[in-house]
Length: 232
Image (cartoon, rainbow, N blue to C red; front, side, top):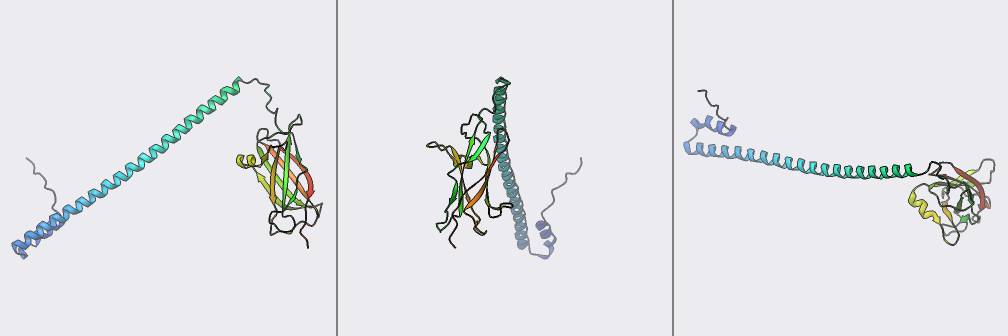
C-alpha cells in the first residue's frame, strides 16, 4: 500500500518544532497551541473574505439580470407597438391624404414687437407671434422645429443678428402655443444679448422658419416689427 501524504503543518507549528530542543516543555506546548490557533484564525478570515466576495458577485448578477429583464420587456412592448402601426398602415388606402392638415404657409402676426423684459426704459426683447396655415387657409397647430432670428436693420444690406431662438422639443413647442379666443399662434420670446450693442432703429427685422416633422418641407418668412429704443 502506498503512503498517504500528510497535510503540511502550519509554518508556526514547524517553527515551534524546530525550537523544541531549546525550550522547556511547557513553553514549547504553549507556542505549539498558539501557532495552531493563529493558522486557524488566518484560514477562517480568508474563508470569510471569499464568502463576502461571492455574495457581492451574486447581488451584482441579480441586479444585472433584473435590468436585462426590464430591457427585454421594453423591447417586446416596442415590437408590439410597431407591429400594430404596420398593420394599421397596411389597412389605409394608398391615396390617403397625408398632408391634408400640413402647414403650407407661415406669417408673423401683427401683435409682434419689442418688449421690456428687465423693467428698464427701452425694449430688450422681442415677442414674435407665428401663425401656420394649411392649404385651405385655416390656422393649424403642427409639430416641428421653429426658429426665430432678430436682426438689426441699421445696415439693411448686411443686417446684424441680435438673437436666435430655436424651439424643437415637443414640450416647449406645446407651451408656446396659444389657441384661446381666436389667437391660434405660437409665441416666441427673444431676449437680446445684454452684452451686445442695442439696435439703433425703431424697427427690428424678424426672420422665421418652421420645419414640419410630417413633411420636412421648410416654411420661412421675413418681416419687421416695432421696437422702442432706450433713451440716450
